View 1 (cartoon, one colour):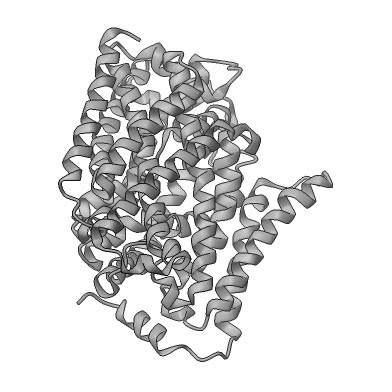
View 2 (view 1 turned 180 degrees about the vertical axis):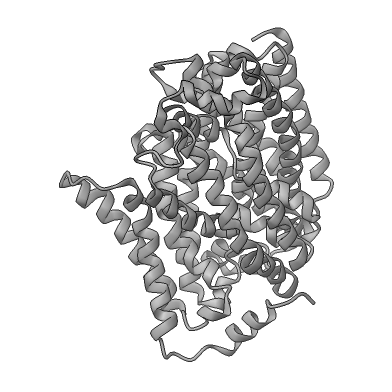
Length: 495
């Protein structure tokens, strides 16, 4: 790295600080801090939803898979998200926005006390917080690996630097800081990604045809849509997981819809995000697909993208790329921290201490900032211990994907009238069933040294939860509570 690269990175940090300070002026109460006052335009919400699905892990864990397995990385990741988001567009996203306008929610789990009951809400809230601790910890570890590759600093130092920057601006600005950083991140990512794409094409030497002829220089399996263990079954499992995740089972993504101005605006935001997932990753992942041509037999494929960037990007542009990687990860982790803070502040703490319900708006804002700060600190500690949980890929694919379903199924399907008879028992038993399936596969079966396909390891918890929840909807004869029916009916249209 040259001096100009460091100057670009410093400039990026200055922009983040400016975003935090500017956003601070827009936050007057907890509603501003958690949902931007419900004033997000659809294009900004869509970009934020899209960018919030990225982190430095894409350029570490996913780059490693693209290096070793090729095009399947796009198929089972980005393409399944784009397809899954179509269900979100028509069935889920508008209902999140209407929940805010009609019930005043500020967190994704706030409506669950009415939809089910307080115990069910608390189980989902606590479980979701624990899952996100692992997820965000993996993202800090990923950015630490990237900084180590680019700048030679210890991974632990990179984790601390990233965490401190995020602590500053998200604690000040809340969701406004998140989405404005997402916008800046998107602009930087597009600029650096396009430059990287063109530079690799030039190095391949076949002009625009290099997009297609490149695959002849790679192992045959790299051009296939499925490459074991990333099979069609794995992709199907990820498709279902991504529907629940990107519909709002990943809570920070629900917040983008909740903060939209109306159901129709949330619908447009979801459609925009789906389109971006369909197109942009083809360009973004291209250097990762090409890496084995230029860097054969890498001992650590997780460093493939960073080594490609250092090999082919000129001074200044390398700094821009690093800034984009920083921006991706920091925007995603800040978004998670803000949303988890809303769940803790709005749904967990008032149950632990009932006096909190009567606190002033200013005091609630102080609690919001305190919980955001504390959450980030804990995830940094987990990042230091990521290898104990299977490394970055293990945390992202195995732990997060496997545990997401049991928590998100009652949350997402609970918005739909067709599942009105799935009550608190359905929610609790589906979560317990999914977590039990995860524990059995992760510890009992593997202790017996039985080979379990990755697709089954990921999908079994979700499918177990799904079958239990649907079973209640079909076979339960319990009456639907009037307030539940009224709430579900109110979500059918704006106004």
